[in-house]
Image 1 (cartoon, protein in one colour):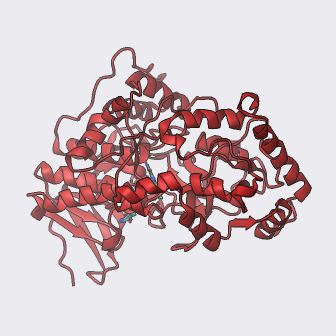
Image 2: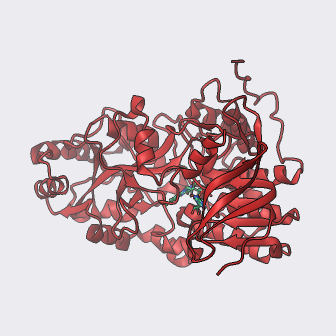
Length: 560
Ligand SMILES: Cc1cc2nc3c(=O)[nH]c(=O)nc-3n(C[C@H](O)[C@H](O)[C@H](O)COP(=O)(O)OP(=O)(O)OC[C@H]3O[C@@H](n4cnc5c(N)ncnc54)[C@H](O)[C@@H]3O)c2cc1C
């Protein structure tokens, strides 16, 4: 039997990265905290525990050392271009400005102080089909993946001198917010840990919603699916979040008058496969598919004339996939390409980075990852291999149960590409090959990108095909907040006293700091940033914000 929690200064609902950061900062400012999470103790850290650990930062020490000339102006231009914010998205716009201005010091710098280290080579995610997303590399890989972030923050909490002021309850699902005289004063908790059954917890200063997004509830994902850009929701959507991110707290915030915005803005991926060893229903994995493979539509026709190339523009890849009602794609490559280029976004399939084994990690970059490819070929029903294109076509058809892949057509597509490669670099008149050349110019990608590798090549066999499907991952929309993370009312836009929201629950700031698209790495960063700002606001401290210089200031939204 657990004791009823003592009344505290603040209740934090959710022990994901955002909730943990907020908890740590509240403890440091001398506040008592009740941290509630429906998960099991070993799941503390939420999705960050499974995350790859890339963090978007601007003009960082790692970028400077690599002579990447980034700037706040450039980063904000990139951010706002991909975000396509609507004129009324005032809070997302302000959050975007602040994130870009503060990410280096108040996200990266803060994490460094608690022992987090970043890989010296900055990755270049989302560079855009036309160079129109990240102008420069900004994806800073955490040494130890997302798990190291959780370990660092959780470790800092446990060792903080104020930690006796913290009560933690796992197996504690918050079912209701308690509002008295318009103020948030607590919540109702259902205890699945064999404790008190159901109880009310109360806080004198704040209730912080850090309960994650809606990506774990495929019903909501389908309901909110952005049909105007992606057509009808796919019949099959893989799950790339966790079932705890069920959107129930969003509903609860709505019930008490809070504004939940832009749920139809989601960061779902077009390059996922079924998990070889699923731990949850529809469990999917986001691949980092080979750039040297050919992306084909469900009929085996290469996307064109602009090719689809993984890791360039995730949203556009999803649009291309979803333009066909069957809503899946194929990646065709070979063993050699897959071993060198295939990866998975997440801590689970990157054990050497996760466990910080530098030698094995470097060997993986130098020699590729044959074990990873074998693991997927043996375990994921979306991977097939064959010695010839005709046999590959038959196996692809067996995966889908359709007869859509015509071996002759597949052979035409592959030969055309292979023949272009065979003509030699100076005659590489193919957009994918131009991009491969550019990839190999960046040292973060050179070793992980084959040098113009043909698909049918006796030295690179067998041939591989990977069926890629849509997967729900991150919620870009969420609970609307001001820069102090105070939840704003749907009517009138005033804050609900005592109620705060952080992390994915708050659309990583303002109910949707990303607008319609992300530059990647902005999610973990957004959790740290919102968690810190909420704690500062609750403590009544000055928020670590900066007034954007006039050259950066975006025009104010029109008065509505
Ligand atoms: C495999 C993978 C790789 C990723 N890689 C990256 C990356 O490289 N870079 C990046 O920026 N982002 C990445 N992300 C995204 C990022 O990890 C998440 O967006 C982020 O961790 C969300 O953190 P959060 O604290 O807001 O929410 P969550 O991690 O979802 O935590 C919310 C917590 O709230 C709890 N909860 C929910 N409802 C209730 C309730 N009613 N009562 C009590 N508790 C509740 C949940 O149990 C959970 O522990 C990745 C995600 C995944 C899955």
